[in-house]
Image (tube, rainbow, N blue to C red; front, side, top):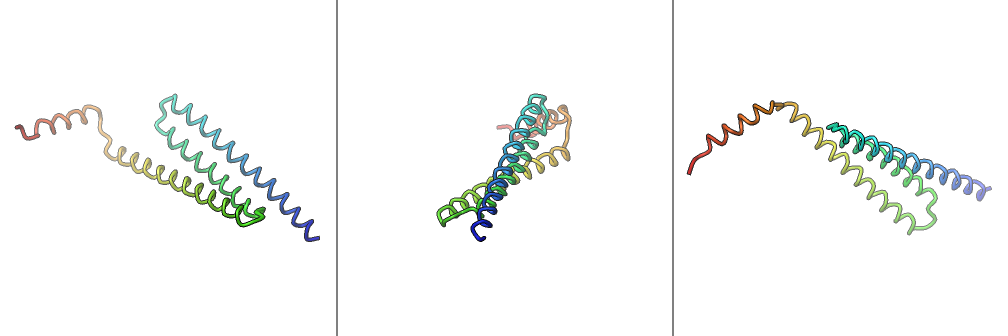
Length: 133
């Protein structure tokens, strides 16, 4: 009875891992292609869209790695899975950090939005006010 239950859990976990990895690959590919087309159309949010897609895809991949711990048979497999989880969590954190930087940059740009004429005028004024040697 115990072996049958163990086999059932391993089979279900394996199918779930494969399903989550397939979803992860699909999300990453889909958002990559859409971000590429947005980039071709000069959409300023293409990078944000790509980073969000990668983050969501990595989150699904991270879920599959966590499930993989259920099927680990020895300590070596568990350590390998643990290192993969740490690396993918770090990648997800870096993507979120990049997204926050982009959002901060966009909010600062929208708060300080100037026309091209205003930017040129301010640069010329700075140049004229600079000390002459």
